[in-house]
Image 1 (tube, rainbow, N blue to C red):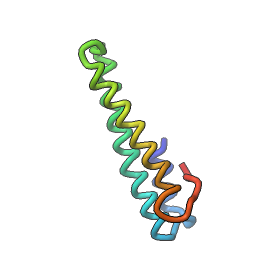
Image 2: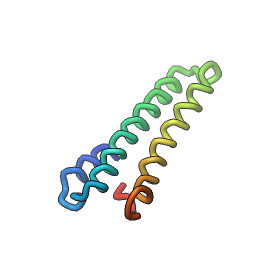
Image 3: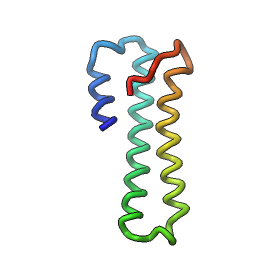
Length: 86
């Protein structure tokens, strides 16, 4: 869902300033990382290997959440503060 939203934002006319374009690119990369991390955790969970892989699952969840947080934080750092469009 969010990746589709990022593509729609990228194609829109609202974010033309280089800082905004950079922020959108960062979010695109971070959300791709988050999706990849969450997908790995989902596959581990489907294999009923929680006891064996719980640390890997925990780390995958943490990685995904951190990637989303970095995207959101990017809208208040390194330039004028803006509300994230995501």
